[in-house]
Length: 151
Image (cartoon, rainbow, N blue to C red; front, side):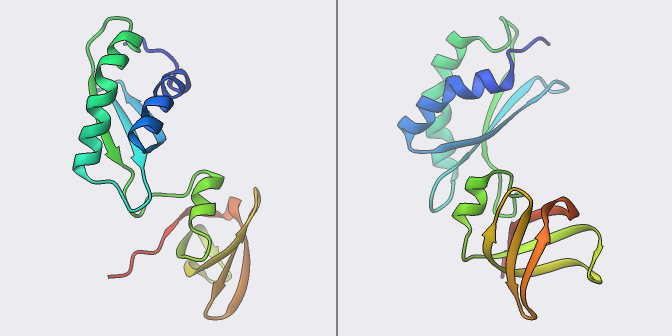
């Protein structure tokens, strides 16, 4: 299946996302299932009603945009989930002061998982306050950084 570039599709959809009051944070084509999944976020969290509202708003304009050059596809709208990995500076900004998890490819200072409060970040490092004090970690060493979900 031939598709327009995902970045072009996302840029086309951004004004509709803003109109609905959501942030379009990611999009993926699955060529095996011929589906486009759009991941949205909003302060306070995403629910099924919000996914449906966004889906209904973009359905007709997206058909006109024709991202698959006339081929059929399935459109999905979803949340990335509470434990989604931080990918953008905005993800880190929104979580400053929150407890996060740092997962590592290999043990870092003896452990593959740390929990702490996100206090700072830049392109290369993440700083968290742990039970042992402030810890500055190279982002390249981490396999996943996400919100800590406490039950």
